Length: 638
Image (cartoon, rainbow, N blue to C red; front, side, top):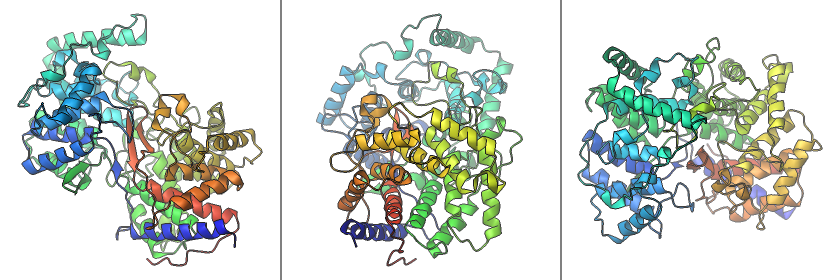
């Protein structure tokens, strides 16, 4: 047997053992979602706002924030990324709250960076909103948020359903907060990080531009705040309150993500809900599941990904030739079937006649199933011999029908909504942090195409030929000039290309198709000298970083998935497999401090701790099949 083949088998077997060991007895997998320290800083500020501070929580959290500070005194949004002003302002404020003296060396370094970068005045709107909660920024100097927006019909521009689901869940509670305009006691002032600079959203814009017009609207809304008719405002606030209550999940969260969660808690508290009210008590207690305490520190996941991680793990094990009736596979399928969403969520506003189906990302998020998870879960369920095939087939059928019905008019698929493309929302003054719309993306569209083709395509009877053809056309039309595809939810062109090429190949495009050939050429060109692939997150804002960055396990795997799908087992692929073999740890996993997951391109990034294991395992399994090895791992104990 060839040496590389033998090494790949050994690496695959070790990775299989590592992954099986991580499965929860209930059947799911979940890796940590690591983000930046703004999450922990805002948690401390929230606890001060609610009056529920705990000395030990504050100490442990401050330890984590300090441990994440770099030698230059700053904090970033991703591993070894550039300093971020807003994150540094929030971390500095949280450490002041924890009692760190302003003349301490680490605080002085942070302060020096903040002042050099323009001071807190140049931080993002949401950072200054947190400061306004404690009287450290004037509400009048923030963009206005009127609760009356919840009364706008869904056909009117700038209604809440013009915003992506994560944005609308944040905006609705913030309209309450921005109406009440509280000013709690922070216990100290932060004048030492002010410069008197003009905030970005207050800089002039051409009056004949959309940005200029919306700044004019903001001025009108500030005046309206002072004269809003009482009956209209009371109705708007009550409607917003009920909208929030209706969307609380079983575990107390909102959407399973941090921003809507904390702002909903604040909004309801300002509406008179005490912290021991069942709604808020459940919400506050829900953070415990997202909290990690170790090494005398405390950190918080901004979200959790058990459905996504479980589906990826099942696919990886199947590609590693784990038997479809293996106990771990069956347990995972049982759990996934229990997680099927059976109720209509916000997506039904745009698709009112579509029956529910699909899967969400988190443990509890019935209001917001998504296309990515649904596609991956269907692919996973198809790889398992379940002991109730009728139940499994029904869930798959509903998931396929729901996914197809969520296709946007242009043929592509977005993550959570259909036709959520009112880009006017991005011009609003308060929208300076992350994506606020959910347009179709190459990676999500590719995952749906791959799912539909694996379901048998149009010949299966459950797949609409016209919809599938439109999605394939969308992917071909959105290939970049260099041969890659943009990755909305993973970093970046390596992720997009690693998703699209396998989808197009299973859809019938051969290696000689110009789109596939161009993608393969691009992957060859951006391969690192060490044989791996990597892409720095700065590629979202600077094209010079496309396909450039230190090699990582997950990104090397994504490149290999594309090359293998295209039938390429040549030198580039072999070198990539060698990189995975050479960099595997003794426990079967890989190190990956780099962030390769994306929340908001350009603003918010995630290190999915299980990506470094599931994707390399998938790539190794597919490589071994490509070179004619189909022997299952030697040991696959459950």
